[in-house]
Image (cartoon, rainbow, N blue to C red; front, side):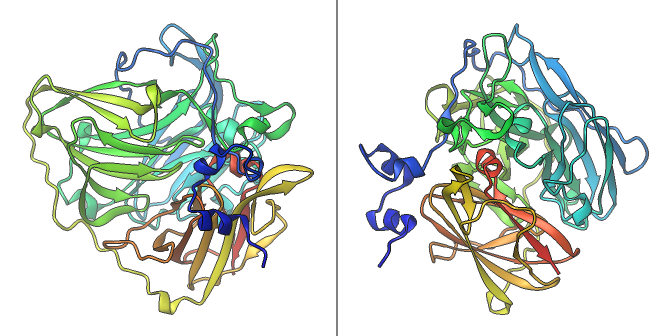
Length: 484
């Protein structure tokens, strides 16, 4: 009997990190792990700059927004200028606020020197506006993306999705928030206004001159072999600022957490040990609030939490930490409680209705194996043994059908499904505790099997499923499915 690499890991009871640590292990060369890219510039002092909040995008007309991709220089590290590619020359890009059920049109103008693609991550979007990785907007060109937004209120985000080059182009700054609101959510009395704060968390590294180097291959897609497992930065940015600080009142705050890193996973917790009340996931509100000591986010995952700073005293300093990091990368940002303010917000016991999809009604169960492999004579990342090919259709679900997709991994892969929100049905054969929640990205950990269940609704056409470790994605870990 031939034992696959994933089966060997399970039998040994080892995660990929343990395998990588074993001297002389033959699996090492086939299981590259994310690697730290060390900055040449001195790391800045944590908590020395205020938290910036991305500006709200202003519509050019009702429901229409113009996004211009352009090169710019911004100050990220104190005293240094950093070249970026940004929407509107900003990093992050401006936050777009839209209403559920109201069509929003985004006109993308490419003022850069390379082609780009815009993807609304988490959007229930027709295929011609979904940002298929070969639907390129060439330099000097523009394209209108239409988002009908027939979906729940949720924290979405938009980012570049160019085939083979998503990693470097997002690393340079092509990402921003897209918030969908609806009356049902607004009626709950959750923290709002200045106490509803989007937090884009990502890691970057900086050269001595302030630039953000990326270990790409000259003239070719992908990264240098040492970084094939993913690129980790040594500076943690929140909304584009290094380890920032936010002054808060003794009141409840709604924090919209987004992991926009290329490859880093975060285990977020408060230094006080106090709870964060989780109220929403990728696809919007949970059925009921869940008090949690920590929140884990793989790349592209989102979580919304409420922190009640009314439980602290004026003068208290509370850090948001990353329990999955070490040294400076174990810090994220700091909150300083500095005033009293009235607070009429609430956390209702019931947030929304989340109907559980019935697996007995699934039309088919499909297998997707995420694994390292060889492509074009070199290393790469494959789905079902194949590198991404826009001409290959991996699955053809029928419009309206429920399907179960069984995802398996060698090492960790955050898997993102375009078009359809899904629910996690099982993890290594065990059903998750608690009520279901809507997701568009799920973390496959080392040597793990996760079953997801979804219904394909709304639109026929081609979409992709892929790993959202952007180095894995660029090195071919993506597959096309077509809704028929």
